[in-house]
View 1 (spheres, rainbow, N blue to C red):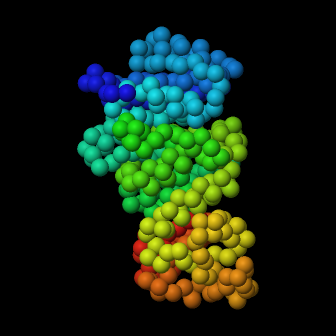
View 2 (view 1 turned 45 degrees about the vertical axis):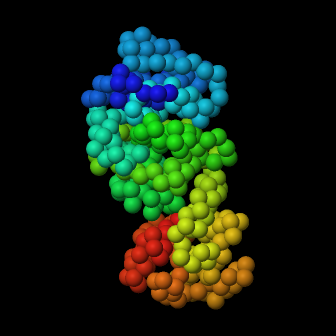
View 3 (view 1 turned 90 degrees about the vertical axis):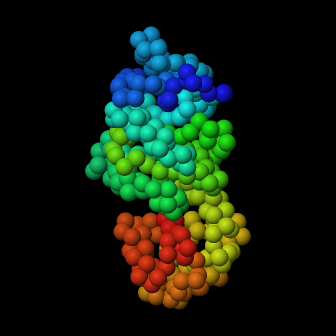
Length: 343
């Protein structure tokens, strides 16, 4: 769709499904933004509760709201339908169980206005769940909030999803140039981010807390099979192999830091892409000297010097990634040149 001078600055796209208890709060947070030149395209994905009628009432009260009632096709179809109807210069994602803080859209649009090299922007987010009951999610949120620059986002893309999907705003043109969400046996939001980074889209975050990311037990990332851990790692491995082919000066050889069963299971997905393991490295003396699948487990102190090895730390336990990064840094290894965290 060609954009005109009369089109809104931002289109907020919001897929909705059976969210009668949260959608009004989410919608009110959007319509209460300090940036008023917006439209909201809400797609009711065949809800079986009062979601549709709540959305219709918002559309009756505010001409900026457009509602599409669709047969249930899933969140990807609903999100892409909303994108296809977007008229804004910028397109923002919103989930029906989250809340925007008042300046989110204005701050993100301002960053895109001021930095034409950036195609996608996020922000720092506030965790809206139970920090004790959902400690892993809370730590993930804290981690994403440290990744503010394109370099930080890019170099940490294979650790976890570095820009939470509900916080994203992008240029309309990026959707045309680099594609919308794809449906498949993988997390569609992570795929979009990795695909866009792979094609050279620059990303950044507003250094401010601009939304509340709630964590209900029925969240799709907890319940749908395409968000299972194996699906994440298979997707990571596909894009990581592409990254290594371009950036590893010793391609296809890599050195794997970590040798536990989980590490090996995840790292082995790279073998399908022709990557070759020179060695595993570990700090556990009981593992050192063993040969696993024809690959020797060596002491971490035996990691070759910079320029002689490209290292992939595949350790995800709390604190271990930071410990390995410090170890490699002290030995002169440079992030992105000599090693890349995978977790």
